[in-house]
Image 1 (cartoon, rainbow, N blue to C red):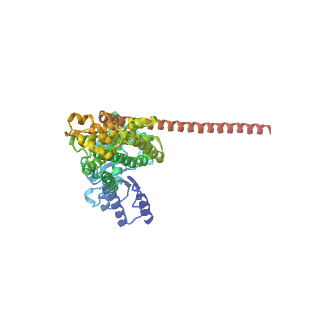
Image 2 (cartoon, one colour):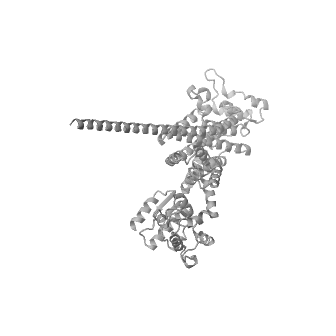
Image 3 (tube, rainbow, N blue to C red):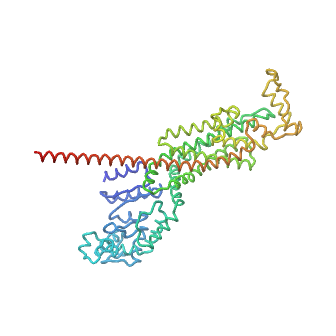
Length: 545
C-alpha cells in the first residue's frame, strides 16, 4: 500500500495534464482507497486535470466520485460509456436484467453492474459471431475465443451509443483510419470529420495552449504587476518638470516614453512565448508523427492563443502610460495607439513563432530574437536619424516590427494637436538650448527666426508643432498608416513562413529516417549475402573432405 501511494505521488510531482492510472487502489485498505480517489477527484475538478483509471469493486463513496464510466465485457468489448451515475438507469430503461440482478436490490450500483457483466457472459452477440466467423458454432467454441456479453448488442443499438459516435466524429482531429460499421456509419463519420476539420482542431489546440498559460494564475498576476511597475518607472523617468513655455521638452518626454514602453512590451512577449513553444514541442511532433495534427491548425491556434496576451499587455502598458504620463489623451488618438500596439505585438508574436520553429535550441532562439529587437530599436529611426543609418542596417528602418511600432506610436501622439507653441515661446526655447554666440560663423540661434508654421499664424498665436517635430525626426505623415498595414501583413507572412519551416523540417526528418532505414536494410542484405557465401564455402569444404 505504501509503495502504491508513493508511485502515485511520483506521478503527481510534475502535475501532468492527463493522468492514467491502472488500479490505483489495488493493495490499499478501504479508507486509503477512498482518500486516494478523493485526491484524484480534486485534481480533476479544481486543477482541471484529466484522470483516467481502472478499478475493481469500488465502494459506494468512491463510485459517487466518478464523472464518466466505461464498462468492458469479456474480450474488451464496450458495454457502456457515459454518465457514471446514469449507468443503472440505462440498463433498467433497456430492460437488461439477468438471473436475478435487480438494481433496486443493490445499495452500491457498482456491485450490480459487475454482477450484470458476469451474468451476461453465456451467449455471444450476433456481431461477434459474424466478425469472428463463428456462426453456427457451439458455445464451447465461443468460450474458447473469449465470450462477449450480450450487453454489447444492447449498447450498440442504443441512442446513447449513436450520440457518442457523433461526438467522437466531431472531435476527431486526425485521419479516419477505422473501417466503420456499415455504410451509414461510415458516411456519418466522414460527415463528422468534414465538420471538425481544421477549425475544430484549432479550437482544441487553442484551448490546450490557453489553459496551460493560465494554469499558473498566481505567476501570471505577478507578471502583469511587473509590467505595470516597469511602465510606471519608465513614465516617472520622463515626467520631470520643465521651465515655463518650454516648446520642446514635453514632446521629447512623450517620444521617449512611447519608445521605451513599446520596446519593453516586446521583451515581455518573447520571455513568455519562447519557453512555451519549446515546452510543447515534443508533444506537437508526436501528434504530427501520428497523423493527429495539422500544421496550419497548430500555427493558427498559436495566433489565437497569443492574441489575448497582446491585448492585455497593450491595455496595461498604454493604460498606465496615459494615466501617469502627459501623452495625447484625445480619445481618437488614444484608441488608435492601442490598435497600433496590438498589431505590433501580434506581428512580434508571429516572428517569435517563426524563430522558435527554426531551431531546437532555446538559446539560439533567444539570441536571434534579442538581436532583431536590438537592431530594430537602435536603427529604427529614433536613436539614430535615418540619414546616418549605415546602409547595411537600413532594412531595420523599413521592416523591423519594433521600429514600425514605436514610430507609428510617436507619429500618432505628436502629429495633432497636443504640442503647440507661439513664435515667442519658440525663441525662448531656443535661448534655453543654445548660448547666444556665433558658432563657427554660423547663425546665432538666440536670434533664430520662427519656423514657417509660426510665421503664418502670427507671433502670439499658438500653432501645432507636431509636424515640425516629426519632420526633424524624419518621420513622415504616411508613416502611421503605412506602418500599420505593413505590420498586419507581417502577421500573415510570419505565420505562413512558420508553416513552411515546419513542413520543411518534417520533410527533412522523413528523408533522414528513410535514408537510415535504407542503410540498415542494405547492411542487413550484405550480412545475409555474407552468411550465404560463408555457408556455400563451408558446404564446399565439407564435400571435399
